[in-house]
Image (tube, rainbow, N blue to C red; front, side, top):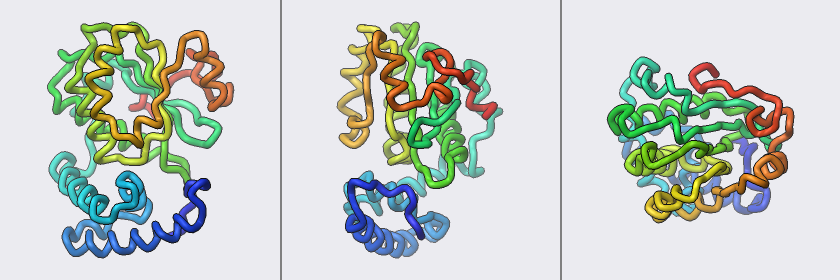
Amino acid sequence: MEFKDSDKENGEQTNEIERSKIGIIRALLEREDPSAKEVDDLMIRRFLRARDLDIEKASAMLLKYLSWRRDFVPNGLISESEIQNHLAKNILNMQGFDKKGRPILVGFASRHKPSDGTLEDFKRFVVYCLDKICAKMPKGHEKFVCIGDLQGWGYSCSDIRAYLACLSILQDCFPERLGKLYIVHAPKLFMTVWKVVYPFIDDNTKKKIVFVENKNLTSTLLDEIDKSQLPDIYGGKLPLVPIQDC
């Protein structure tokens, strides 16, 4: 398989190492789980990179994912009818691409409240959204950019269990899909919750998170996103589109 989205800074030598390890992992997976034959090399590579090229850890992570996927998404996808309460709030929106060609996701934390449904409902919503993003990924790309907007967020919106569940799904089931997360309009009181969540974020993910001050919001986003692709609420030209309508 041709790897078109390789990290240039790692060079071709790393890719050769990855190719060799991907082959080893594939053999291990198919011996343990016949459904692994449906897993492509790019997915194996994402899990491998998420575990710093450790074959044993990456294989265990992938096998756990395959088992989870069969149990949590037995029909292959989450239907919109299962998550209507969350979709109706337009919590997540998609629009545009950054300068690297990665799709842009915008999430509004204040639109979610713990009373909106069960934790399992929220997990299904998260999986639906991540599946949708991945399905919309342009050819040659594997990652997306997210703007997490905390405008209007308060303790009535705080849902640490949901945040940790979202983080777990992203890191354990969709590794190396997040390219960058911009956290904007963060109120001071949010930092109390952030201190609880932060220890559960793995080191690879931590490197991708940027808190943006309000005074630098538009300029920071424009460094990475062309104005023609930036959502209009941040000074760009594109209106937001709810993820279910993408």
